[in-house]
Length: 146
Image (cartoon, rainbow, N blue to C red; front, side, top):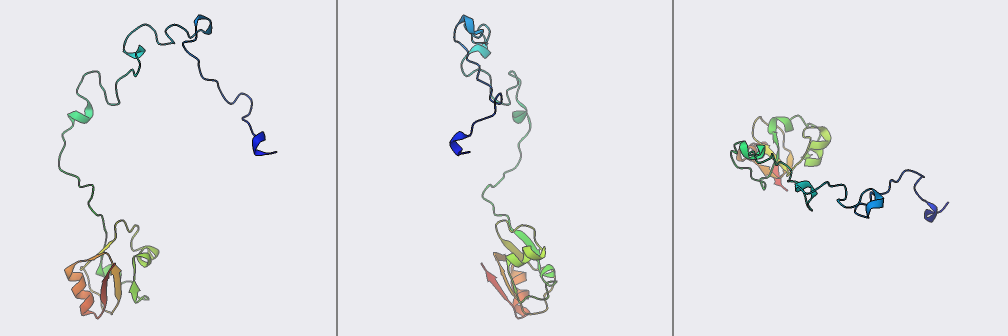
């Protein structure tokens, strides 16, 4: 068997209805669309959400607030969560995902200052809060922005 021998099985492909091809076809004259009216016209029908002239649901519901589509969403971690990682001197986003501290990195990782860190450790993240950076430096570690 070769690729050019392949063809669909018998009966699995239904032929298209050929409308507007004369009286004998059974689909002639009005081409199965009946007589006149909106649905008989080309490009017929109203769009999704049209409710017959009634005010559509998406326009009836009140709109509130503002959604910034360009806002960055960071995975947030506190120092107390990082203090649990004992066996590594360099903490990277990949290590945090591997250990299950964070599920998704999203737009980066942000380190916050809740909790304490006792040992010197190098932490690589996108953003550090001022409190977190100060606590890391006080413990003798480094806060590296990536």
